[in-house]
Length: 142
Image (tube, rainbow, N blue to C red; front, side, top):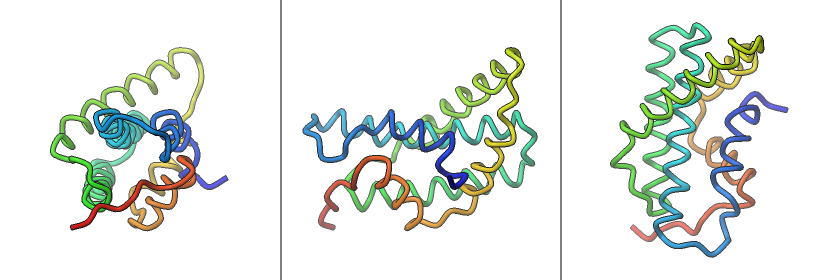
């Protein structure tokens, strides 16, 4: 299994549900926002595991570019990116610290995912979302 499908894939699968399922617009937006939060969690967890500040910054920049493009393509609002990403960072930090307290070291898998996501291209990110959500939403007209 590719590194991208470790922690991030599991979280996204739980957060996104099925793309074609009927849902209110607010729930659909919330599902997209969970993608942002999950990306932030990867970043925060990687920081606890020793990722270097330039790598953390590059990961955030990559996530921002990819998720803003995704938002534009599929009609989501990405204006809360920074707040949601920071919320996710805090959650990721807490998760990794709790794992350490319980004697579990998840850093090897986390760092593999983080390094992959740090440089992931838009099409590969979108394909990963499609795989775990059984498809993509309909693109929005410009």
